[in-house]
Length: 89
Image 1: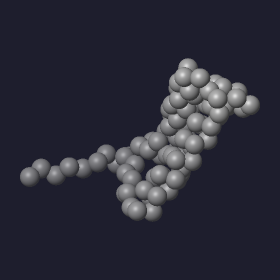
Image 2: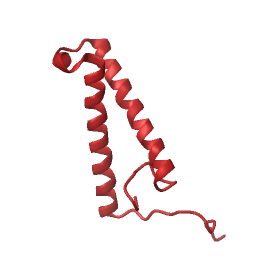
Image 3: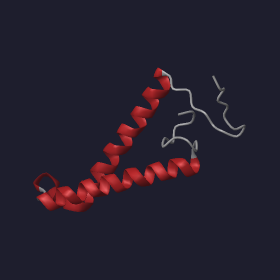
Image 4: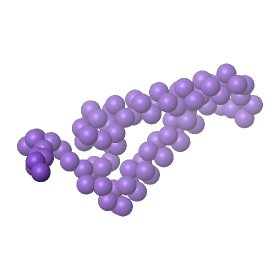
């Protein structure tokens, strides 16, 4: 059976329960913050509990865009093989 070797400069991530919990906590918190910001921008803070269908869709789009941006920033400033900003994830 052939042996598989990684390049010398490859960053590998060993997933453990602690690593998974940190990654999950960061992503959950980031999504909550971005979604709340999306609702505030799309519907306005005073009217966010009475948002229309299109305001709700706009909030979802803003949240998705914010999460995408956060993942891109994580790749630029964190571990290259992870979408997390937490060190070692």
